[in-house]
Length: 234
Image 1 (cartoon, one colour):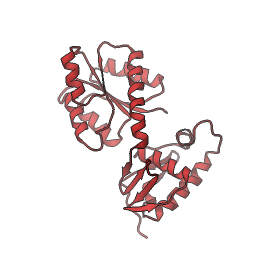
Image 2 (cartoon, rainbow, N blue to C red):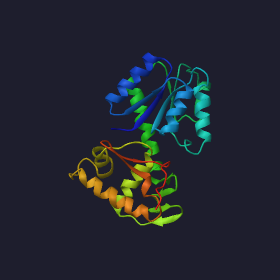
Image 3 (cartoon, helix red, strand yellow):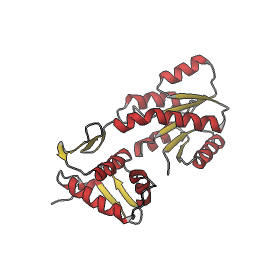
Image 4 (cartoon, helix red, strand yellow):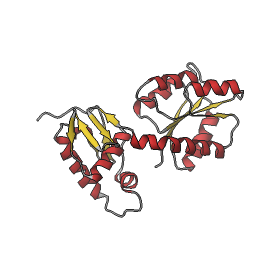
């Protein structure tokens, strides 16, 4: 599954058409028809990118973009603004509100996909180097250091990559197949059960800083990293 994209659009026909084309292009898609639903989606899982309609019922897309830019968790969230407003002044307002790009309706699917890929490419180097933090766990790719409750954790290279991926996509359940593809790469031929071995090693390492419980096994589905899990009594 590709990057998760949130489409915030109150016109069902446009929303479904965009979602259909994005899924065909390999993206995972979530839909929201207003600002409240969009905020709920982002609160649950921060997507890789948001396609945001300017004109929404209630709070506008412009206000929503400004709110996300003001919050630490979403300040670097890539946003492409969709609007019927084509004037240059309107584009400036949208970009100043925090949009990474701006597309005027009507637009072609190919142009939208090109804009999405361009924004994701621009953001990728930042994401690779940026420190990620969930609950008491913090991973800094630049220094290759992991801490839990402020204490350093020693990890092997594979466990480090696995934790980096899980921390970058918190609260989402990842199947073993997805982890193989995203952490090892689909050109590497190893058994899916090898994932379990590395998860076990990762948990053992995180156990030294009381963070092993943050990696949950979801029966029949895969693994999830959560910042809300209660630590089991010892």
